[in-house]
Length: 409
Image: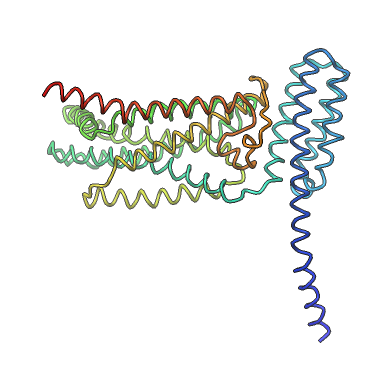
């Protein structure tokens, strides 16, 4: 009976005190995040003061960044990432000593870049993913693989149809081998890119920015090329011409090469986009994997319907939806690229104090929205460009075509 009474009072105490303790814990984490953000601001200020030649004030500012702010966040951080906290203690000390000992600005900038990188890591550690960030990660991941995979399925369907029309069904096997080779090459590309990012002798922030900018450029070009090729007739004419060339060559290698090139372009883009997404989806890898898995299952269904059953699917809406989401992904990559360049001291930082530019940490990573005018400005410019392009492609150009047909009639 005594044990039952003890258990009852323990449960009752937990029910009464639990919400208060959870609230207190949440407040402690929010305060720690605020201290981390303020420490980062002071690190940037100390660097600016050192550039201006005011080393005495720079030393005081760097000292305040650690003692007055980061040190107050150490208690919750030591329970989560003790090694990163230790690294930051050494880095803050190196920054203070470097300023006091008159080390070069290049050396101070390198130390400050390491502090910013680790402060970003602890900011994510102190944050909770919530609902929006996992959903965004899942949606972006699903869209990358599904959009690229759908285009590959369509290309394969066109190639097989052209083989049937050209009475060259005997070349289906080398074509299939080319497709399998492209899938293997895609996996190797992913592994090679992962290794390169890990071992490249380049500052981490510059590597992140470079990867994101390449992904933005490819997304921009590929998406607008896709829009211009949405007419099925154009796509058929292009692929039939390639099939005719392979038939004229009359070799299995030509068809294997055709299958390889048709699929590997999509595979290369997929590997690039996932690498860029992985850089900014720390702590949400599970949701990225789930999005890719869901896309793979969906592609199996689409491939079976198109290649095996000969079904006609609403391809144009599917491709356009995927392309639209990937354009939003390019806006995310651009914002994160700007932030990485700012952390590497390549671009200036002009802060935005408004709360709308300061979403939760995980959401900020997956939307690229960071509180600087440079980052938000480039994202708004890209959105305006995409809206203008959509108006031209889907409103202005069709209107001109209709007007031209009326004149001809």
